[in-house]
Figure (cartoon, rainbow, N blue to C red):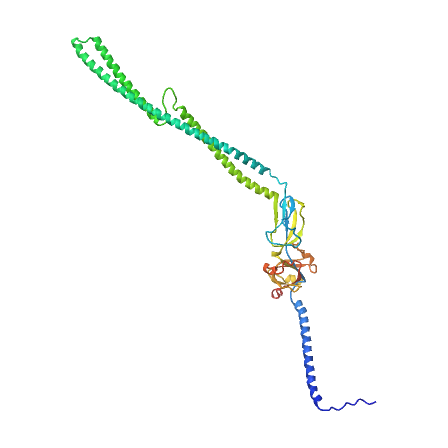
Amino acid sequence: MQPPVEEPVADGSANADAPARSSGRIVRRFFKIAAGLAIVAVFGWLPLKAIWQTSSVEAVVNARIVTLRSPIDGTVTTKAGYPTGLSGVSEGDVILRVVNTRGDRTRLDDLRRQMSRLENQRPSLAAKLATAEAAQQDLARQAGQFRDGRILQLEARIAEIQSAIEAAAARREDAVAAVERASSLAKTGTVSTVELARLTREQSVAQQTEVGARRRLDAAKVELTAVRSGTYLGDSYNDRPSSAQREEEMRQRAADLRADLTHTDAEIEWLTHEIAVEQLHYISRSEADIKAPVAGRIWEMMTSPGEDVRGGQSLLKVLDCAGAVVTANVTESVYNRLKLGEPASFEPNDGSPVLRGQVVNLTGASGAPANLAINPDALNKEPYRVTVSVPASEAAGKDCAVGRTGRVVFNDTAAKP
């Protein structure tokens, strides 16, 4: 057998294309080798980077639990739809309501009865006061009329006494003149001694009559002055007439009724305030709105509508999403190099944006359990725990994704020994 004989080339074009094809294969092979090296570098660099970085073994997004309890005894009700687990709530939202239909309202009823009694008494007191004031004004008018009449009477008596004094003075002057004439005639024997004695006696009587009239005038003036000042003098009555005394009594009665009415108004005002305060207390004892103290999500419902609860009984638990943290466990060597306040970042496993924060708690193997939604003991690969705070602005984008896993990367420069 003979080997196949190659046919001769018709022309020289094939020999000319061979070097070009060879160089193209070399370029393609070079690019393939470069791409393979790049892939090896990338996939090799990532594990090396993870090894060289100071990071946690495992980490999870966490949040503190707020337990809401019933402040009173009563029955659980809801305003709108019954909230379910993981329902979002804002700060101040009413989640549940506890109503106690058997609340003690004894004091409130007593205060309202007192108010009703005083409100019924007030019109009667006002009517009595009006009657007493009218009677007092009538008696005051009568007393004024009596005083005016008494003044006129005393003025007339004074005028009468003054006239009597003038008459007595005239009789005294006549008696004095008669005695003088009789004394002259008695010396000549014209007038007897008996007649002289009679005329002398008449003179003395006239003088005494004038003196008595003047004294009565002084007494009348004193009585007039007293009447004008409101005091009455006399033998047949006391210092005040009956109308004036009755007017004073009625004035005192009106003052007492006015004081009673003022006291009643003050009691009504006080009772109004006390009833308002006691009504608020009764409402607080009979109704209680369970409001969300923080913005977050309902983590666990521990009751249901229609259930009777006691004061202090736990009703539900709320996640404090505004205070979200990341809990992680680390190896002992990493734990011993970390410091509080050190910057750290959480890298979620699902590729979500990185959350940046700082180390706020370092807990060793003997640390007490924290009040968190996910107990740090669930991270059981390493016993050393680290808590990283996440700013509210950073955590808002995660929509309070409690339970999201990932890893925490610590500041390489600060973490190196």
